[in-house]
Image 1 (cartoon, rainbow, N blue to C red):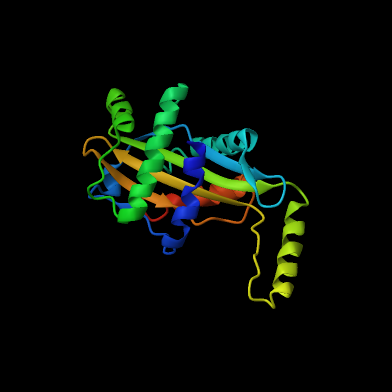
Image 2: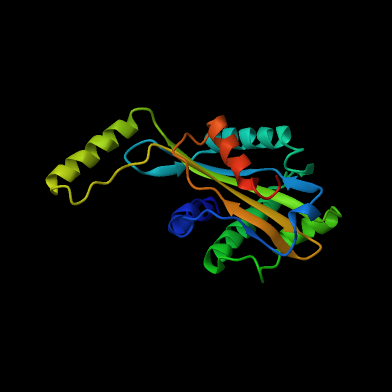
Length: 220
């Protein structure tokens, strides 16, 4: 599942240049209180070359920072109770459903006609809460010293090919996704994906800036 979700930024990067949020017929003024899922984070680590592998430790650090920022900004984001996914089976179902929704939204470029997925719908109804927020962070970091070697390699390839192909490696990056689900209307009320930022995926300032930007112009 982690590999599936980590592939999403690659699949959607070219199609989200405008970086606009999508909404349903639900108005932001109608969203007074929002429960929120524990953030889901999928961070990779590059040890050698450009081969990335999922990192539990970086993902946990990123998750902790997203979670703490949400707690600090509860009032601005209109957040109420946290939905803790302490069951691995349940968490995996949510992961699959969010990955599915990102792909579907990317294909359709609209929220109309996309109902809530079974597990998300069930959780919202069991908690008698109309709205719920889900946040996801993806990205990668590199071993110290790895980036310089990749830049030098890229320059060498450029010289050998007379500048026709110069692969420029990215040092690191982080991307955030946000969904607001509406159980009453059985739909996604709001969706936005941030543009990837070339910062460490555990950089708290970068995460906070992206997270705040996800709701700017909608919730405040």
